[in-house]
Amino acid sequence: MDVVTDTELLPSQGETVLGKDYFMTPGGKGANQAVAASRLGGDVSFIGKVGNDVFGDRLMANLQQNGVNTEGIESSETFSSGMANVLLKNQDNRIIVVPGANNQVTAEYAEHYSHILTESNIVLAQLEIPLSTIEWCSAFCHEHGIPFILNPAPAQLLPETLIKHSTYITPNEEEYTKINSPSIEKDYGETFITTLGAHGVTYRNMTVPAPQVKAIDTTGAGDTFNGALSYYLASGYNVEDALYLSNTAASFTVEHPGAQAGMPTWEQVRERTDK
Ligand code: ADP
Image 1 (cartoon, rainbow, N blue to C red):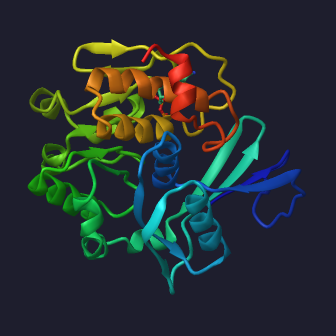
Image 2 (cartoon, rainbow, N blue to C red):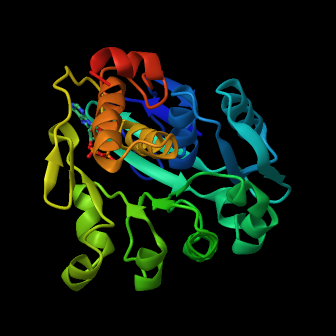
């Protein structure tokens, strides 16, 4: 859950200030990406954990309202829901992320729901749960021939076996510099799909441009891109077409404030493309 406080003043140590407004909005990269894929028409299941608290109920309800299967989500008795505390002052933001129950999504936990993985055409993961879980999941998918996409956000250096077990890895430009070394790029050049904001996306030596739109808030652009890429690849589109359609889907998100509100349906994407 993102708890966003809009303020003209930021408190210094020991000080209390009055803020202008606050709002709560369901977030988490995985949840946003699941909603993006579901809104396009995908049959989406989510494996994760929320806290046994008000946020947990809201997060779960939001996924269900967006058609996401929550069978693989449990409530932690001991940990709070993952939460981002966002202090917003004009364009400047300061964010504290508390992983809470997300850290309890262990490899054993994911393994308990491995039937969800084996029933899926594609599996998409992010780095907001422990790296050891992602490593297990990528190895499991590799072994079972299930395409595995890793959105390496928040960025950290990736072990080579994880790169090897991933079908695609989708950093933005900044993340790309943090997740690997140039020698890895030589061996796994066909794995990396790098998003370039308004410029679209680059894959191998091809750049697929994004539609030109009036961007008002880029929050959730990457999440929509990843949810859409998974949806279109799972639907049988080749990579080039899937990248083109995913750029188009993500371009809708930047035209609206917040992450999930602007995520498009397939019909909306179709109207903006010739597919
Ligand atoms: P992130 O949101 O993770 O930082 P990017 O900024 O690279 O990632 O954006 C992800 C995708 O969202 C891009 O590849 C593109 O498809 C789309 N996108 C982002 N910004 C814009 C924009 N200003 N206009 C059109 N599409 C955009």
